[in-house]
Image 1 (cartoon, rainbow, N blue to C red):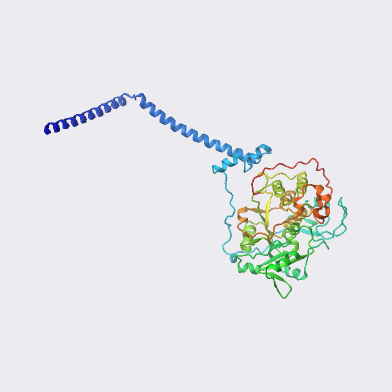
Image 2 (cartoon, helix red, strand yellow):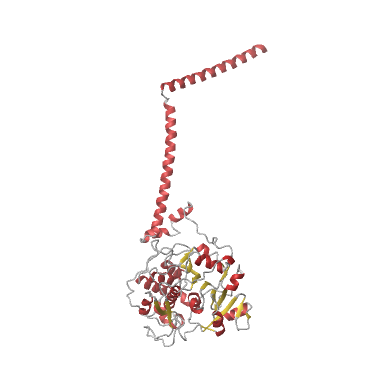
Length: 505
């Protein structure tokens, strides 16, 4: 019985193998017949068609998707510069288009800090022996005697630091000649006098790092990473008013030398007696913009705001931002804004100055032809980060500083609004280097103010408030251009509409 079952199982296996072989041979014969005859079964050809069609569909869909993204991106870039308010609003970072592009990774993330291409060793830097020649403006002098005039609202009899510049004098100052004489602060008996010992000390300063503290908002922060060569070459001058000097005396140690000089670390404190303005913010523009007037013997200067700690050797800064590219004036690009009208809108929104005065300031600039910034302009931006200024004191740079200061004196102390305007009025003859904002942020460590700036003028909502409270709100020694009748008709001026391009801006 067992032998029969074994034989039966073996025969079944043989039969199964035979069936498989027969099927294989039949399949091969069928395939061979179809290949030799040049014909394929219908289901086989359909599979090939479906595969090829699917691949083509994927490729076409991918190409269309990329074209759609490109069209949206190009439209977005165009809309940012469009004069139509509807399209320019798409440029807003809160818009759906911007959010979609950002989600897809098509919006580049601006760097906050980046490495600066500095020279390796301050000791190897070659300082130019010859100063940059003055080609456009060869002789510059300053109006020193104030001529009081009736400004339309009140008659000023006492001299003012910035003088009573007329609209005609202002217009004339923008027309460049080889010999020029302009208003540039420091009118006789107008305030901001330096002590005799400080005047004597700064006469020897050819290379200057300058800063300033007003109304006790900060204490001096010592620069770091200074080479021994820079410590010997540069004068570190901290300009202060009397309120700040008293505040510094209470909070840090002041060292006095035998010549009457006062020192906080490497900083020489330079006291300005009789502040020229009512507003501390406007007083701070005197050493910042008119560095060449305070320190007339200086050939090069680096301005840094009082709340900053400089962390880059100043000699390396001069090499990087001036000498390497043969520039004479360098300032950083603003992180968020390109147009002064964008900056003005941000100032109003953040309540950093009186809104009606900002509007009046911008209406005058708009009336005088100042346009929104666009890529067609020769300048990278109309708005700088003014906390660091690097310059050679040439005649043209000194003139630009005077004209810039005159705008701050005439209008609002928000100097970022005036910088691009003066560049525009000089018709491209003022050449400067505007370096990346990420490099700007790598030059310093920012320290908080001891207290926040605050002024009642920042909260004013209408011009009527100034008229009702002229003694407490209205700057009596500056901003006279806002109260002097303007020679043009500003009633028909409509400020350009701007889109908010950043939550921080």
